[in-house]
Length: 433
Ligand code: CDP
Ligand code: CDP
Image 1 (cartoon, rainbow, N blue to C red):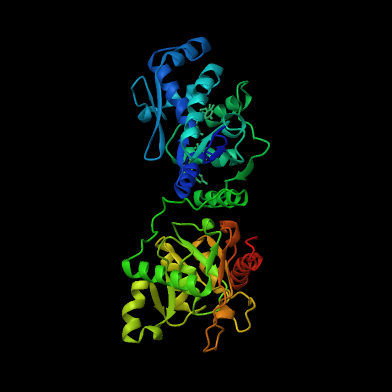
Image 2: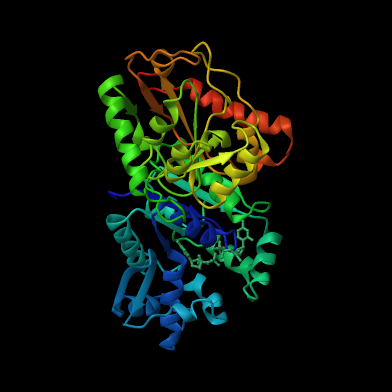
């Protein structure tokens, strides 16, 4: 049994497996394993030795006798065969032609599958191929079968300048006896014909989250600003003070995404909210504040060091929306209050469309968060602060896809904001939701 997370991506030639698996691995901070490259490597080796690929016994013996070393270079699989690195030859025409034959030899599969499982013992991996979900890791709950129409796939290969008889290879791969290309019964099928690579990755991310894969280990996307000493001090002091006076706690902090563009979306109760929300993340996040707040010499000096970006007005103001989009495009995280302003009565308020517009422009994931007790501690308009306990509950990240923003317009933005607000409303102080 693998002890790590395995994400299996299977599908026919040029369905986009490699591009999608590589991008997904990057987003998750997992290693990427291309199992097709392993069959190609053995094929190249067999051809190099001048063997007849139509003789399964000779192919099997040659594979048994070769020394195969599998490792990872820059989080990507690499295979050395008898000390040679076959990487430059894997897409050569004779390899394209022979690989389906070589990979239909059961002994070859046996040997390579053992190496594939070896990766799964050492690492969290995204592995792509033909039988990863059906044969190599049948027990993984994370299985995808990605497809595209034959015309689209031929076009994709041609666009790469490759002469690859993918129809013949598909036929051979699907009809062979040993581990044919099949859709594992529990795999999610995604048609990528009309999707971009990022669009496919978004859809997969959403399903992974829904299936309970913890995605907080994302490390590879740019951004993820580290805290400067002022930020760290503000972050630490606000937490310590809130813990002492308001018994402040954060529930399900492990759900937070720690790198890449991210919107932390929380209901808004008091002026305490921004520093407390900031404590839900390990990295420095960005906050928007009204320009006039920075007019005072002290705040004008300090707030920019705390990642506060001045805007004309908070909420759905144009300069605020632009600032948010800029922050997210730089791969950073930012706090947004979908309701626009602090609550007067402590209840949740309707969502404003601003957040939806930012989602539509950036497709940044959203971590919904709900704050409890800050209204009781410091109600809007009140001069009195009460020592009421404050809790923030972090929800599961929401990933949006191209399909969510196929149409644009205020209604769409409103619906996106409402979707986030509904997730916030589901969070309860006992940590469910
Ligand atoms: O990238 P493309 O889809 O063209 O092919 P690939 O993933 O590099 O795989 C090349 C060939 O290896 C396939 O046509 C299959 O015959 C074989 N293969 C396999 O049998 N099982 C796998 N898990 C992966 C590839
Ligand atoms: O690994 P596989 O053979 O399934 O496909 P790939 O090598 O990842 O993708 C084949 C080509 O299609 C690449 O040039 C990709 O950039 C392109 N592609 C695309 O245009 N749109 C997608 N959704 C997926 C792949």
